[in-house]
Every structure is written in C-alpha cells, then in structure tokens.
Length: 327
Image (cartoon, rainbow, N blue to C red; front, side, top):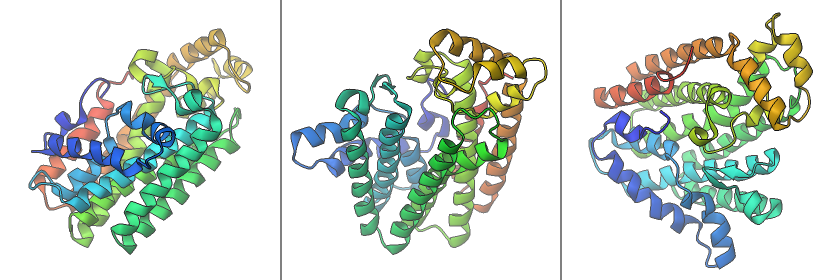
C-alpha cells in the first residue's frame, strides 16, 4: 500500500468525495480560537495522511451506496482525532522528531505542548462522540482504555530481548487493532447496520488492524525512510522489539549476536546492522505468515455483512496490505 491510495484500492463509489468532506471538519473540530493552540492542534492534520480510520468508518456507514450523513462524518472525525492524539503522545514517549515527513509535534512545540495538544484532541473527540449517543460515547471511552492498555503493555517490555510474541500481540491488539475495530463499528452504527453486521464489521476491523500493524512492523525493518515518512528502524533503536525481531532473536544462527546489539539505545551504525540481521532472518516470513492468518479471519468476518460491494472493497483493502511485502 506504500504510495497507493487506499480509496482507489477499495473502489467504493463516492468514498473519495466523502473523505474530502472530512478534512475541513477535522480542522473545525479542533479550532479553539487561540492561534497558538490551533497551530498545535492542526499540525498533523495539515501534514495529511491516508485517513485510513475515517475511511473505514465511512465505508462501513455508506457502503458506496449513498452520501454520508452528518452523523457518519462526525463519527469518522471522532476516530481520526483519537488516532492523531495517540501520535502526539507516542512521539513524546519515543522522542521522535519526524512524523508524516514533517517535524513531530514534540519536536516543533516541545513535549509539554504535545501532551496537552494530544489531550485536547481526545477531549474534542469525546465531545463529538457524546453527541452521537450513549453507545458510541461508551465505545470510544472503552477504546481509549484499550489504547492505554496496549501502550502500557509495550512500555513494560522496552529494551527487553525476552519479550514474548504473546506480549507483542497483546500490545498491538490494544494500540492498533482496537481503534480499527472501533472505526468500523462506529460507521456501522451511524449507518444503521443490523446488529449482526455491526458485529461482523467490528470483527473485520479488529483483524484488519492486526494485519496493518504486522505489515508496519515488517516495513520498519525493510523499508526506507522516504517510504515510511519517519526513520526506518525506529522501533529497533528505541527498544520496541516487534515480531520480526523476536523471531530473529530466537534463531540460533543470529539470535545471540543480535541480542548483544539490542537491550540498549542504538546509534545509526548499530541500528543498520541490527536491521540487516533481522531482514535476513526468517522473522520477516514468519510475521508475514501470521499476517495472512489474520487476513483470512478478517475476510471470514465479511461473510456476515449484507453488502457484496462493501465486502469486496474491504477484502481488496486487506489483500493490499500484504501483496508488496518480501517473504
């Protein structure tokens, strides 16, 4: 999916135009009338992005068969604001300097403003969700809890070469998959889907999110800075050992040498050496194989929705995550 528009992959009628309607709503939702706060709050909005989460929400709501309602659009804005807030906070934790090809918020405005700015985005998201009803407000609050649990799970194992695959999966289930599932669920709810379809789309989103993160963690090892919009190997350097790394550590041929490099912050030469070792290991293929398992489960969930057009679109999107990866 690198360099490819996911809206084009899905091919749902009118979805591109609906996403264009989201952009000014994102800016409007966080505009407080204070020039400095507005600058902080809109920094990553203006940096752009694929808007994958609002796209999932709108697709689940409209199915390419009608224009998005105001409630559909608000639901998509609420999930994107949560995602953006998580990026503000993540970049403080990671001490990141680049995000989406531009300065990260913490690099531009400092850690304090990044934290407060992220909190502000969460508050605006919660306010929007509250206006969409009790069920959606509760859902978003639960999702925020899952995001925090995922982050805590990850922080507990930073720089630990003894991190397990189970701990890794627990972390990404909270940090990534929970919000993907909620994006689909909110769209299904605002779009008036049946209860069975709401559950099916939620299950799809959860498994799609797992595939998405597995892909991202493979790319952190094998892609370039330009492709990622952030430094390649950043997770390795910061002690977040993802599944490809954990598999590589378990290999008797390279695991012991790799372990001597890891367990501490890495300068660029050591980062490049560790990346090359992981890229040459069986960890990439093993991670890709697990991605295919989650993709199959995501596709199975699509059998529970009534729209063949939506099912085909979401299936194509899932397939696109894995088709250009090595291994």
